[in-house]
Image 1 (cartoon, rainbow, N blue to C red):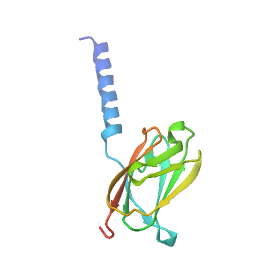
Image 2 (cartoon, rainbow, N blue to C red):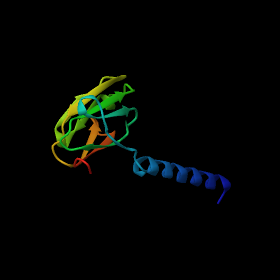
Image 3 (tube, rainbow, N blue to C red):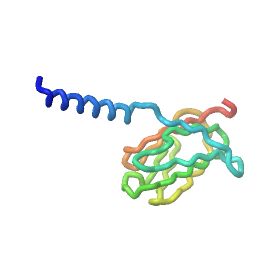
Image 4 (cartoon, rainbow, N blue to C red):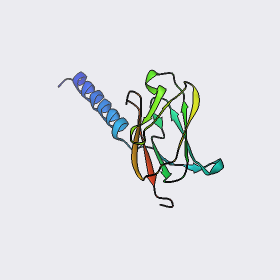
Length: 128
C-alpha cells in the first residue's frame, strides 16, 4: 500500500472516531439550582445543539428552563417536549424562559423543531 493510501485511511479513521465521539460520547449533565421563588432553574445554551443537553430536576417543584439561543439557524427556533406536551418558540439571540411543574418522574426527551438538536430532562423524586 502506498503512503498516500495510509494517510487517507488514517484521516478516515480519525473522522469516524470524531463523529462517533460527537454522537455517542459522554454528555454534560446539570442538576437544576433553586432560584428565586423556589423554582428549579437551568440556563441551556442553544448553539449547534443544547448545552447542557441533560438536565436533572425534582418532581412537583416548579421548573424554569432559560433557553439562551445564540444563533439564528432555523432549526433552533423552537424547542419541543413531546411527552410533556410543551413547545416554545425561541427568539434568536435572546433568552426565552419555559416554565412548568413536572408531575411524574422519568426521562423526557426534548428537541428542536426539526429534531436535530436533542436533550433529556430527568425528573427525579424530591431528595433523590
